[in-house]
Image (tube, rainbow, N blue to C red; front, side, top):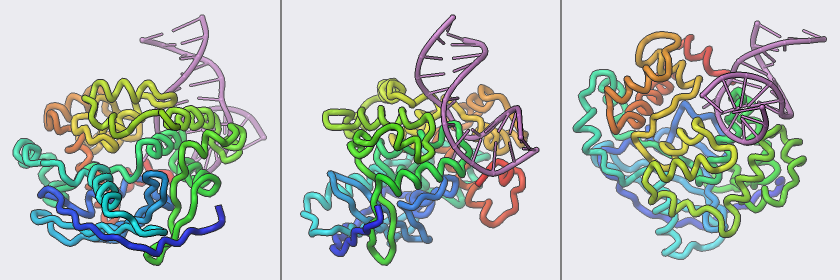
Length: 324
DNA sequence: CATCAGGGCCCTG
DNA sequence: CAGGGCCCTGAT
């Protein structure tokens, strides 16, 4: 799409996350690949959001500190937003960035754990995030499968260019996601031409699952983890690796660490054992032993801390694992 | 130039 | 439950 929609109206909403809350550690994840629907500067985060059939621009500004958190959500739109919709958008942002979860028990049980403590000194209050809806995350998970990271980025950007849109707000232009119906209407061959390869079929079937009368993300959020996991695994193209990302990032299940993919396996081998390669069951037992029901939240903080440190410290072993 | 694995998953036997 | 096949691409 070459035309750009300009979002000139703004609405504001103050949000007060549950302390402790780390703004930068929650809104920006340096281990995630870059994509054109997001922008970050310390204390500030921008994204587009397709919600209730419209495309919005969002900006979040940090107004607080870890122990007294506060943030301003600014909603950019092409028409005035009714107050009730402002509340629904704020609630969606709060869910995606896990703003209101109480982590008191986590810090009581894991705050002094020796391997985690150094990372917590830097990132106390970090939470899992999902920048996107469930449907949009499935697209990202599909692009990640059996591809080196450079190619995954290419796939997502090709999809944005063909099915997404460009929106301009707050002095910047970002990509916005399409709706599942846009992919339902697209021929599989068109998706293949965008270098999706055999994933074209997967994208079509996932879009079908989210069309009118399809999966209801709000309802899935209420499911217990085992039922949620089996529902997600039932989606075409979603296997153990993708569901591992989904349970933690999208659905904030802090104990969802029953599987590890090869790339993460290499990194956790180094982080936990200072070795090149440790067998998966050994890693999974170790995180259970150290952090119990908080194991994925704890591991995530350790993992992201590594990628933050990478920006300042030379880490040749890690660079070798990141092919961009 | 050819071959291969990659931040998997489906399908078959 | 194991293993072949799948689109494409940079690395070797």
